[in-house]
Length: 398
Image (cartoon, rainbow, N blue to C red; front, side):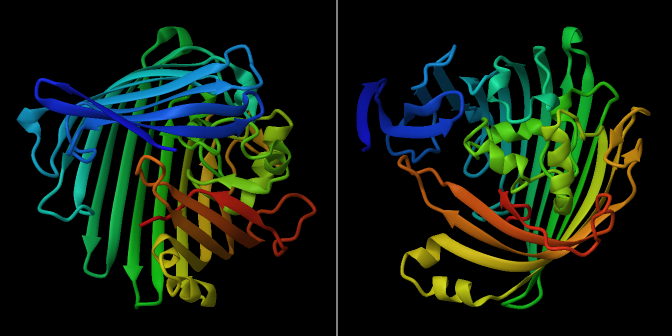
């Protein structure tokens, strides 16, 4: 059920749209709440005073059963016009055992009316702290000290004559002496080549480097996204939304990072034992060749569903290297610097984009990958073997 109401102030009718929200994790149980969007009427989420908020109650009544998220965006008229908005943004959130309070400046440059051709820049300062370790699926990759993060991000999107290009640069520094200063940067580049109407070739490069005392949650895992980025997705934000036994069995991968997906079980085994297989630096290359499949053709012919759902099939090859600054670090049977890691296989990705109650896009990407070859399998395991995983989140998404 959606409820809308409006008020009038200074000749600007302002509307609030309310919608119920339900979620689950192993600490809150069923988390019930309400989400709110606020905007000046008729601006279609593109005007002044934009509000996006949510408030929830954990029905298992943990130590802190009330949680919230609030984002408020105010455009800066002097540097804004169509497709080229500059704005300030306030974010405050206390949920799933993590608090964050952020002030951010955003700027977008978009030539003309092509919404896929743009450059976005943001810079922010954020105070954040892990408040409840029980929410974390793998506590060994988290620290509890308060951090004061200065961050900058650049996102470039360019359509090409025969494909698409996206690049993302991210730099963060902790300036809080009490929790230990550190800097971490990542660069991700995606290039799609449209070979024909039915075949596509995707290349993704990823590199991450952090200083020696980088916090555990910002370090890099070989097979999936770093722990800090798990907070960005509702399905991976807290323990139990994905059943913990499934995670510990290596059945689910949170997409992102170096994405050396064939080494998921190695990372999960170490995480489950309380070890920390994350590193200070990493570099990887992900290749995928998309080819047509019968099921996607059938979906495209279904009214309405064909516009919201697609199923891609692909062959993939991942290669990368994970390096540890600490000379005492050990991962599996290797120590200090791991060898080149590579994997290959085939997979399918189900992409669903259904607007939610409040009209916001909800992109859901579920992958089924079969990395049947590894260059460096665990002791006693063959290079060629049947392995499978379900990935949450797209690795290469255009």
